[in-house]
Image 1 (cartoon, rainbow, N blue to C red):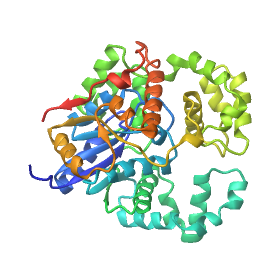
Image 2 (cartoon, one colour; image 1 turned 180 degrees about the horizontal axis):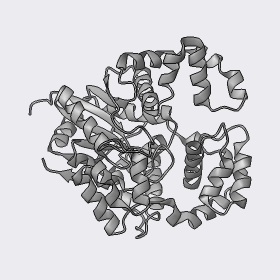
Image 3 (cartoon, rainbow, N blue to C red; image 1 turned 60 degrees about the horizontal axis):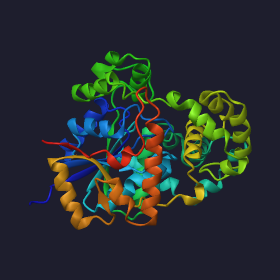
Length: 404
């Protein structure tokens, strides 16, 4: 078998897959040819929210619309800060040993500026200047952006005000930390902006699409989603397997949260500076998840951060149990080209990989921890839809195979 000419990696959530994602895949393939492997969040996203559609449905949509191989970003990286999210994904792509470049969308579209920003964010002097700003109660991200502006100018600081730029910079930083030889390319974001509530042409933000689907208006998003993906989503909605929404499991989640002690909250990732006492008090007096989030959120603690803490607290994930890097590569779906990538990985990959979470669970203690955390999150996820699912599906769900 001839080696694939070029393999491009993409980090994604596809919540849900839309026209902008299809455009990125087409551009990545046009630039290099070859194949595309996507590292995708599982059933929960970086915002700490349940994905609208189950991960295998989202993987199938990606394969139908241009991806060749879809692998899962483990939960403790998917539901985390931008830095940890990016590091976990780049670690997986680097561990494959056959990925040539990583492509990402950005508001800037200027890869040289983004490389420069990554170098600046690796400067210790930058963080030394942030102390007073953090003491004033602003978020880490806001303090860092202000420090960059003071030391390097407004133009560079403005790069950090856009979410896709910020993630792209973190991908580059992760590669530098790993001494990876993977290169980077970026595609300038087209059409509607991140979280925009106004579509532009045939492009709408994922948040706009999610809002329409959650309001039971699936047909309103047809023009913003590739037809093959749209049909998958509509089938899941008709069969009441989607959309997933924490509201369906709210009382069960509240029950678990109310039984947690202040010390339990203290051990949850990203909880610091006495926040555990505030969470404990709010949880015991709140009547809904939304109320918990609104009562805890402050200028320093963003909504996404609080959602992540609540989810990880429910799942019993402890800060001292977090691993620095992924322990395996779980394959969610592939096409014929993806099968070729897996054959190359047999020669080059430095992590165990499999289509079976049950097989990966049995490798060693660290992999068991990753697999059991993933499975527990999916068991919760199966309660978050109108037609609830059974436990254990993460060990039984078959890999998605799309023939070219």
